[in-house]
Image (cartoon, rainbow, N blue to C red; front, side):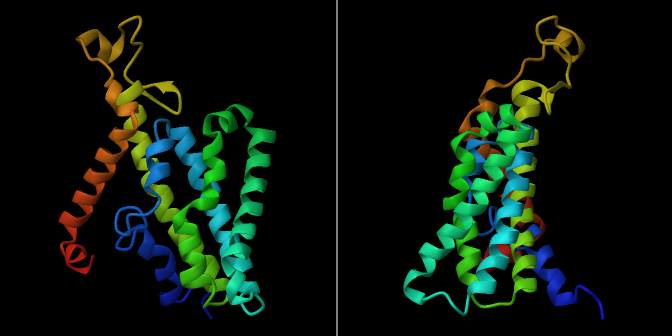
Length: 215
């Protein structure tokens, strides 16, 4: 028996394309604005959310039959807060400078509406395996957009990728800068993230007009 049925695979693949939590459901926009000025921060945030959402969905699914309905939101917050604390401590231990860059935004994973939404909409009604796949799929869909936005914002805003110069040295005027090229400072400001996300939404819906009718 295959580990992933066609239906199981769709739990991972759909959020990457036709049901992306950022571009289709328009959730998690705050972090897309806040931490995508650098590609490294975008990648770390994406990995962090994959861990929190994947494990969180499993834990909530395992507890779904014993969680009293009246306190389910509190229990879900405790689950996600515990996982976020683990992520925060790991970052402080192994990537302290990056943890300072991300700062409070790691903590704000707790209030990410994508995570709480999947707990409510899926994990409380399905088994651990499907809940795990759903969590990973939605987290990857979220993370892919963060990485794309971070890629373009750092490239055109700072002329670097992962901190390494791409266009040359802007001070010594080497490479592309020798032709008069200048970095676009607007790209490292939060409004630029909205513009990049808007372009991604436009491209996605232009390729698949049915998404406009469905949403």
